[in-house]
Length: 82
Image (tube, rainbow, N blue to C red; front, top):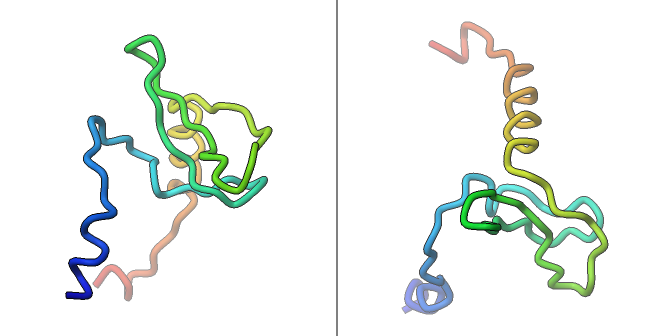
């Protein structure tokens, strides 16, 4: 019964954006979601759930570059890898 309560809140999505649900807005703390513009370009923006947020849209390529740089700095000890 408890699981069924949250199941109805999930929406069907047409597109699976790589960074949706992983990032929160640094300005207001709301979720960052993806959106396709001109049937070609993917932009991410704040949902603005807490009110109008003045943070601009960000291209997916910029987020890929930033995430790649962060992941490249991760170092795992041999003990962890074993």
